[in-house]
Length: 106
Image (tube, rainbow, N blue to C red; front, side, top):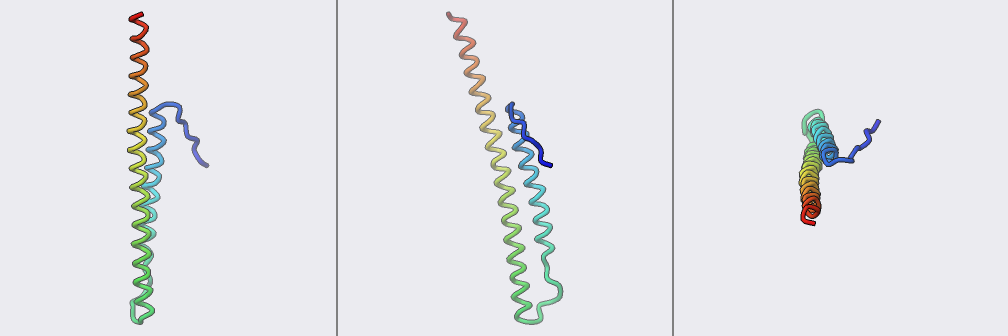
């Protein structure tokens, strides 16, 4: 069952982005483990066997690269979300301060 995202507060937005990055890391680890397990049985004693071994290596490399790239993107998105939320909070705080002080001078 999927979890609902609660993103009413800045901390909740950051936490949700963190959960996505953590889930991506977990999937990455699983994909890399699966990719490493893709090893044909036996030895390369014929041209066809050699081609199979080379293809399997290519598939393992491609899967590992794709999984790592996706995980890296999730981490980058998390960093971006944290920075954006912090900037929004700072802007909101600054605006609130300006409004609070504008009433004092009147």
